[in-house]
Amino acid sequence: MWQRNQTSLADFILEGLFDDFLTHLFLFSLTIVVFLIAVSGNMLTILLICADARLHTPMYFLLSQLSLMDLMHVSTTIPKMATNYLSGKKTISFVGCATQHFLYLSLGGAECLLLALMSYDRYVAICHPLRYTVLMNRKVGLMMVVMSWLGASINSLIHTVILMHLPFCGSRKIHHFYCEFPAILKLVCGDITVYETIVYIISIVLLLLPTLFISTSYAFILHSVIQMRSAGSKRNAFATCSSHLIVVSFWFGACIFSYMRPRSQRTPLQDKVGSVFYSIITPTLNPLIYTLRNKDVAKALRGVMGREILTQRWQLQLS
Image (cartoon, rainbow, N blue to C red; front, side):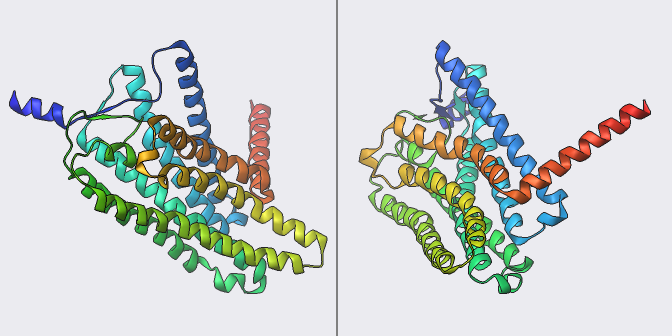
C-alpha cells in the first residue's frame, strides 16, 4: 500500500491543451489532422530523398535529418496529449515525463544546431560553388548531423537529470500539455536562481548564437547575390535560400518567445501558444515549404506519383 502511494505521488498531472467543451473537441480534432499532415509530410520528404538518386547530396541529406527531427518532435508530444484527452486521464509517470522531456529537448536543440549548419551549406553553394563538392562532401554532412544530434542529446541529458533530481513540493500539476522545461521548473521548490541563470545562458548559446551564425552566413550570401550580373542566377539563389529562411524564422521566433523571456513574465497560456507553434505548426509547415518551393523535391514527388499512376494503369490492363 505504501509503495503504491509513493508511485502515485511520483506521477505528474498534465493540464492538457483542451477541455471537454464542444469547441475544444473541434480544436482537438483539428490538432489531430495537423499532426497526421505533419507525420505524412515529413515521412514523404524522407522517402523522396532516399528514393531519388538526384537528391543524394549533402543539402538534401541535411533536409532529411530536419524532417526526421520534426517527425520525432510531433510524435513525442501529440500522441500522449491525445491519449490523455480521449481516456480522461491526465497523469504521466515520473519516468515517462523524464523521457518526454529528454526527447523534446534533444530534438529541439538538434534542430537549432542543424538549421544553423544548413545555412553554412547554402553559403558554400552560393559563395563558393566551384568548391562545393570539396567543402560540403558526404563526410562533412555526416559530421554536421552527428554534431547536431550528439551535442543536443548531451545537453538534454544533463538538464533532464538535474531537473528530475530537484525537489518538487505542493501540486505536481504541470500547466502544459507535455513535460516542457519551464512548466516543470515552476513546480520546483527552493532557491534555484543559480540554476535558472545557467539555463538562461545555455538558452542564449543554443538560440542566439545559431541565429547570429545564420545571419552572418546570409549576410555573405546577400553580398554575393548583389554582385551577380545574371538576373536568373539571382532568382535561383533567392529561391534556394528562401525556404530555409522561412523555416528558420518560424522555428527560432517561436523558440526565442518561449525560452528567452524571464520566468516572472511567463503565463501558462503564452507557454502553450509558443509550444504549439514550434512543436506542431512548424513541423507541419516545414515539409510543405520545402516541397512546394523546391523544384528538385517537387520534381521527385511528381516522378513518384507518375510512376504510381503508370503502375496502376498497367495493373488495370493486366486485370
